[in-house]
Each structure stands twice: as structure tokens, then as C-alpha cells.
Image (cartoon, rainbow, N blue to C red; front, top):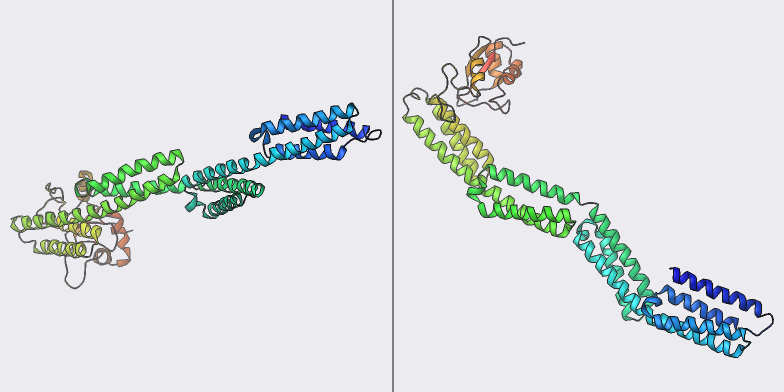
Length: 400
């Protein structure tokens, strides 16, 4: 820029002098002015980079023209000015195709960087605009319309950079996708993914690491590609794990029920064992319907009921005296035994199920007070409308 500015000042000074001298001599002002304009135009298309010899020769000839005017050689001055102009035009014609080509290359690189930022999906309008302008610039170049090609390539580059910036502004979309897949992997691991779907579980984990690094490197295209592979494998690992775990829980439930049926302590508790068998049958139905989580819950309930019939907790430990059917810690069992509670064992009925409303009606003569019982048993009741045969509920003696 300093070179351009200095050249412009020099040329301007030359023309100022010649304008003054033109009053006394026939100075070729028009020719020199045209040469100056074309030198400036050549500088605008970076002739100092792409055609330095031609540009410097043009400047030299223009200075020669000045010297010849000073020597009152006006014909020679005119000839030198014309030569300066031709050299400037030559420099411009040589530089312009090279400039257009390089600018197209810069725009192509910017578009590639936008692609790495996943702009095609995250900033589609801006990306398509850059693509369109780049194609137009290439077409104009083939038609040898170099000035138009150069200007269009500049616009393509600006659009590509804008597309990349817009895409990077949505970088958190990748981070959220990574978080979701990691949550799926955590759940899959909880249900034994390393046992039931080790290959898919490991592949998902490997791609999550790739996606996280790509996120840090702002290579969103690579990141989204990796997270897509991770998600697919994580989902499949979770499904396989749930199915495998559900099958295993059904097997375990069947074994515990068989054990309860042979247990002397479970003698006389046919209702509890029947309830366990009903829960097991429900677990099998849910498994066949691919409702794996519900199947697992039903199997767990079958196991709990079968153990309760034998006077045991689901982990196989013996239930403390006076607290049969309850869940929780030792401290909670002691609380049940206090005088502030009655104990109510949920029973199995063929035609209608036991419910908290019925229990409240039985003890408080007011079914609307069911929430008091629910609040006292949140350790073993997940939903107020779901209680199971064999559960031992604490019923506060003070209803209000």
C-alpha cells in the first residue's frame, strides 16, 4: 500500500508540473494522464506481485516522459507516455488472470473450511450461496472474463467465511449430541452392555472420543460424523443390553419363585407366590412386546414378592422380625416398629386390586387421606396408583 501511495503521489506531482508547463508547451497531458490511470489500475489488480517487470517499466517510461518535457522534447515525451500506457495495460492483462485464479483458490479453501465446520448442514443458506458464487467465478474465468471472475471470487470467499462463522456459532449442537450419546452409554453400561453388546459399546465409546477431539479442534464435520456413528452403536448397545438383562431377570425370577415354592417359611403364603407368578408372567409378556424396561420392573417385582414370601429381602438377607415385607435401611425398619404406625400388608385380589384409597378408607374412614400413607412409604412406592401384593405399608396412626 505504501508503494501504491508513493507512486500515486509522484505521478500526481508529474501531472501537476505538466499542467503548469502546458500553458507554455504542447505537453502530452492526455497521454500521460491515461498512463497514470492505467498504472493505478494495474496496481489495483496487484501487478506489483504478478507483473512487476512490466509495471516497473511503465513507471520508468512515465518518468522519462517527464524528463523529456523538461528538455522540451514534447514529441519524445508523448511517445514515452504512450509506451508507459502500453506497458501498464500489459502488466494489468498479465496480472488479472493470475489474480483471479489465486482468488478462486482462496475462495475454494474457505469453502473447504466451511465444510469442515459442517456449514452445509448448520448454515445451509450461506454455504449454498458461497458454492453458487464460486461456480460462477470459475465459469467467468473459463470465459476469460477475468475482472468479473476476480470480483465474484471475492464475494464467494466472503460468503464461505460467513458460512463457517455461522456454523461455528452452532458448535454447541455437537457438544449436546455428545452429551446425549454419553448418557445412552451410561444407561447401557448399567444394564450390562459390556456383557451383552461389548463390541457396539466399545465402538460407540471410541467414536465419542473422536467427536470430542473434533469439537475442540472445531472440525465439526468430522465431529458430527463420529457422533452419528457413536449414537447408532450406543442405541444398539442399549437395546441389546436391555433385552439381555430382561431375559436374565426373568430367569432369576423363575428360580426365586421355584425356591419359594419349596420353602417351608413360604408355606401358607400362596397369595404372595401367586402374585409373584403373575408378575413373572407379565414380565414375559412385556419382553415379547419388546418393552424391556417394563419387563425388568415386572421381574424385579416377582423376585421381591417371592423373597418376601420366604421372609427375605430382594438381596437374599433375612427380614428383621416385625418388619416383614418392608424395604429400606435398618433404621427405617426400626421406625416401622414404633407405635406411631400400623402395618398393612397389601393383598392380592382377583377382581380388583388393593389401593391406597382403600387402605385410607379402612384405617381413617376417609379414602381422601391416601396421600398420608403414600408420604410415609415413598421408599417403596414409586407411583401412588401402583402398590403390589406382599408390600408391608406403614400407616401413620395420626391421619392429620
